[in-house]
Length: 156
Image (cartoon, rainbow, N blue to C red):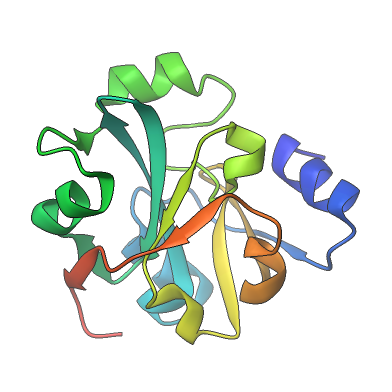
């Protein structure tokens, strides 16, 4: 069991582990799994003046910098670099950060487009393993603030 699946198991929520080929992006992950890009949840590490947070967005969308700055109240908010991600979240592979603020011990900004899906798929800490579960179960009890963060990247 990974830290992610162990954490979900302790929460008592149903989920399905989906192994897949090594992918480098949420779009590739969606193709590998045969699902729409917006059913994949992309978790982005964000640096703000008050510390790290994560932004959770649909895989077929791109974070809007101005929306991120507005949501954080920090005009210098930015995505974490690969080096910062590796340093601050060493137990997770690059590109495989899970959308679980309670596990990562950081606040979560959630784009409302994510909640339009009954179920979502997200990285489980490895680039070859994803989790599929109910969107409601995923964010129940999580330190989440829902706020628009994105614009469309690809057709879902």
